[in-house]
Amino acid sequence: MEDFDSISSEFANANYQTKHYVRLPLFRSILPSNCASLLELGCGSGYFCREAADLGARIIGVDSSMELIRIAQDEEQCNPRGIRYCLGDARSLRLNERVDCVASVYVLNHMATQEELLAMCKTAAFHSNYFCSIVPNPSYRFQSECQYERSVTQKDNGPLQDGSVLQCEIKEDGKSSFRIEYYYWSKSTLERVMKDAGFREVFWIPPLVSKEGMQRFGADYWKPYLENPSCMGVIARA
Ligand SMILES: C[S@@+](CC[C@H](N)C(=O)[O-])C[C@H]1O[C@@H](n2cnc3c(N)ncnc32)[C@H](O)[C@@H]1O
Image 1: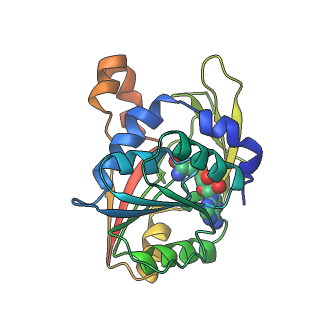
Image 2: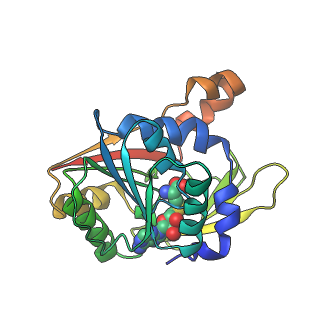
Image 3: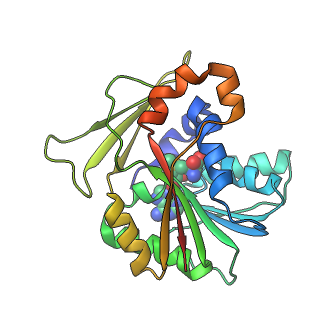
């Protein structure tokens, strides 16, 4: 498992464009309507928990990185929204409550094996009939050049297949870069494990760029991104 404790401050302070202008609107669009309670698996420093809390939901954020949970809790103390953060493992968590929605953003790709993927999806199914995620786009054509503040390459030279290790370098202007490693999972494997975990239907939702992002950078800037988006939304329903 990637050690997020060692890159916690770089990760928590990352401010890349696609986070605000692509992932955030995609996150909003995959939440169920009237979402009053949400559990985020792998909440990191709480960026998406805060967003969901601002939309009016009761939030629990769980992450396996003690450092990231500490950063999220510090933020909660400074600007309270009533979010509960706990240290926990998305593969085995069993809380004593159900929620309207379980969400995860870029966490399924940190599951190292299909057994781990299935375990995380079972955790989602245990807590809700609705599981929405943002994952790396399984059909993404990798860019070794830094584009939209990131480059993605395959670590080994073999064929790209389930479980292949990918390296993502994140580089924002004026900041030193940092790397995250994760695993490639195909669309069919993700769909199958979600169904094996008990979800009946799986839908894929392509990302859009928010109005703010379009106004700030213009349509020409985003065109290559929208032709080859690095992320995808996925909704699983029981
Ligand atoms: C790429 S980060 C995404 C964080 C957050 N969702 C966001 O988008 O800002 C992946 C997160 O998943 C967490 N994670 C990885 N494996 C986990 C596991 N088994 N249980 C809980 N969290 C896990 C990491 O600690 C990290 O915070």
